[in-house]
Length: 620
Image 1 (cartoon, rainbow, N blue to C red):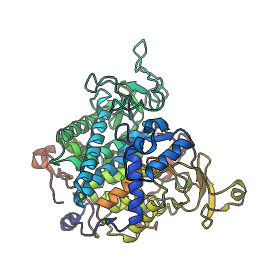
Image 2 (tube, rainbow, N blue to C red):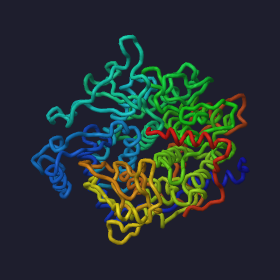
Image 3 (cartoon, rainbow, N blue to C red):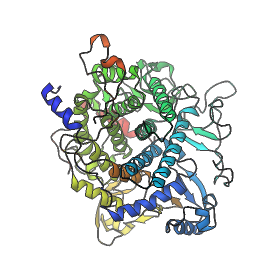
Image 4 (spheres, rainbow, N blue to C red):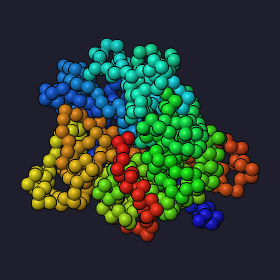
C-alpha cells in the first residue's frame, strides 16, 4: 500500500533531521576507545600492511607472537622493526583470506572511511587526520584494482593480492606466491570445468596496472559483490568533494560502479550459460547474473529473485527468493548512489521496484523462499549479508515511499522477526549488526542498545586479537547439556549442533567468553567452542562497528542517518512515457527483544524447494 501524500511529506522532513548525539560520543567510553586504538594499530601496521585492506595474518611461532605483543603494548613508536628488531614480514608465515576480501575488506573499509570522517568532524590534530587521509586514499586505490585487474568492463574480482611490496626495501611478503591457473586451456575452453568458487588468475589489465604486481581470484559471489559495493559506497561518501583528496578517485569509482551495474543489468539467455555441473542453467532470459572474465557466470552468481541457489523459476512463477530480492536492491542502489547513471536509475525505480515489485516482495508471503533465518540451522552468512544489503538500500535513500517497505523489512524481516525468537539479529549480540540497525532504523534513539554495543565491543580481547582456542564446554559437560563458561559464572544451556557439528547454546555468547573469529559478524555467536591456530584476526567488522558508532548519530523517532549524497530519483509510478524527473540527471541534495506484528511465513508450496536448499547449502 502506498503512503498517503500528507504522511509522506511529514516523514521526508523528519528523515532529514537527525537530532541526537553520536552513538558513541567521543570520550564517553574510555575503555572501548583504548581497546580500539590498539586494534587500529594492529590492523594498519600488520593486517592491512600489504596494500591497505583487511587480511588475516598468520604468525610463525610463539616468539613471533611475543614480538607482536611487544609492539602493540607500546605506542611510542609505529616502527615495528625499531621496537622488535624484526620486520613484520619476518614474524609472519603468511597472509590470508584473499578469497573473502571482497566482503570482509569491504566491511572493514567502513572503519577506514568513517574513522577519517569522525576525526575531521571532531577536530583531531591535523597530523592524525593526514595519516587517516593517507590510509583512506591508499585503500581507495587498492579497491580500484578489483575492477581493473579483471580486464574491466564491469567484471569484478573476488579477491586481489600484491606480489611485491610497495616499498622496494621491504623483504618479500611471507609465504609462497599463489598458483596461477590459466583461464583457458589449449583448445580455448574456459577452466576449471566446472566453474570453481575462485581460481587465481594473472593480471588482465593490459598495462593499466604495473606489470608483475597484482594477481586476482575470480568467481565473485553475491556475498563478495555486496561487500564490494559497501566498500565503494563508504569510500565515495568519505572522498567526494574533499578538497584535500584528488577527485579523480571519485571519477574512477563512478566508472567502476557504472560498468558493474551494466554487467548486472544485462539480460542473458541462461540456456547458453554453464552451470555448476557443466549443464545449462535452464531456459529463459534473466538479468542480475554476476559474470566472469572467462565469459561464464561465477559459481554463486545469482542475484535475481527468480533464482534459488541457481535453480531458476519461470518469470510468471509466484516463487521468489526473498534474500536475493534484498541483496539485489542493496547492490543496485549502492551502485546508483556512486554512479548517478540515468539508465541505472530507470532500471531500479521503474523496472525493479515498480514493474517487478521488488519492494512488495519484501513482505509478500505467497511463493516466498526465505532462508535468511532457519532457526538452529541458520547460516549466519545470510543475516550478515542481509544487514549489509539493507544498510546500502536505506542509507542511500531519502524517498519515504521507497524507504517504508525497506524499513518494515528491517524491523520485522531481519532485526526482530516474530518467528525467530532466539536466533534473530536483535538477539545475536553482534556489534556490527547492532550498529547497522542503529544507523538506519526510524524507531528512534535506543540508548540501551548503544550501551550494549559498546559493552560488547569492549568485551573482545583486541590489540592483539589472537585466534586462541576457547572451550567453554568439555565432553562431559556436553553430555549433560549444560556447562559453565570460561568466566566461571555464565551457565550455558546447549540446544544442539550446527550443520558443521559445533555445539550451540540457547543464547548468544558475550564476547568475553565467545570463540574468536576473523570476521565475527558472519560467525555463529551461539557456538560455545572454537578458535585456535597461529592467527592474528584483523577485527575489521569490529573496527567498522566502532567507527560507525563514533561517526553516526542516534536518531530521533521518524528519522534516520541518510547519506548527504543520497540522490533524487524518479518517483515510483506516474512518470510519463518512462521519463524521469530532473531530466534523469540523478542530482543530489545535501539536506540531509524479538517481537513484532508481521511475519514472513514459509509457504507449503515451496517446502520441497526449502528442503533442497538445505541439502545443497553453500559456502560462498
